[in-house]
Length: 458
Image (cartoon, rainbow, N blue to C red; front, side, top):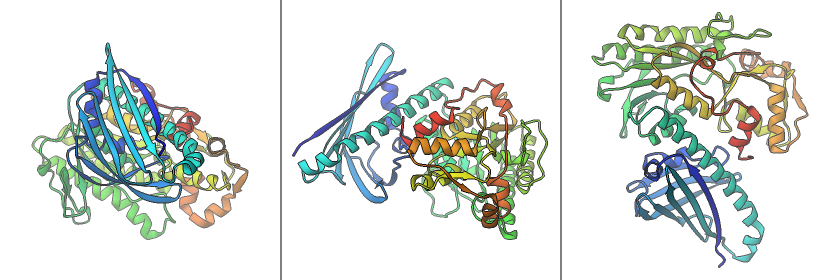
């Protein structure tokens, strides 16, 4: 049985103790999961990465899902830890993480030893593809780790207690492992009564929440809200969109006002839809509210958070742009047909999209928590917008697929009604003026480069 070896080694600007400690923290595996090859942790047993600890994860080989079980077999802090496959697609798999240092720098070496079933035949057919995938995965992992270490070191070693409402959504699911691997404690609000550690039950429909159970909280992030980009906006859907935002926000604010020691900052999400269809105009945080339905939603949403300032809590209204992730939202909807060879512009393709990458959202929220000078409405998008046509062309280039189709505007309006008009076809040219004039440094504001990173094509 032939054993293949793959090695990726990278230099990091930290001590090896810090690098090892990062890997020991909860949700390290989730944080390093690339969006082009995601993993879902089903169960864990044992303590972190120590000998005997086990993890079961769900993965995909193309469209085929499979379960992978692994066990940690070596643990030599702060120098090395390893895990082996207990069950999965390989005949043998061992992943050794070795950490060394030189001066004030640390080096992480990921070494994969693996064998394929049926020996020579599958090795001949799939080794090149497997190692190409491993190369993309570990480039992503090491770059993500390097970015996180820089961000976490930038704001010092003070550990925060952060409460998140709407933690099961796309952004909440990314924030939890990001904060946790930085050493912070994350408390989630959940709507099921059987709660786990670091969870608090709430029921916004009945106005039930007791924040005093959380103890001292440093920051609250409110991400709750009905998905605005799914389906037609019927009368009942519109009511849910508004109520799911205003009712949950008001409940959080009311509970914060009851606390003897309230959090320092309340970050309540909103959207650049506040400005409506900007057409040829470029808007910033000082611009007026638009006239669309989504503009009214954002205004009501932000107003529901306003009174938290009575308790001396710093309020940030995070007007989030088009979140670009292959795991959900607009980018996923454009990637899927493009992969199948049916990519193309929506409507004229001239409409601008003010976008933001997931890592920059994480970095910006982290910045919000630590910079006491920033408050009020803040546009969360890159300094330069991109047209739908340019975005779909970049996706086609990255995936090496044609993008010559067009979905006519009238089809989009027939299928999605007002939602299609205000979300899909709307022209939004938004400047993040507050962030541009702040000390925040974007992780990646070039769409082509960002796309290569999240698709594993760099």
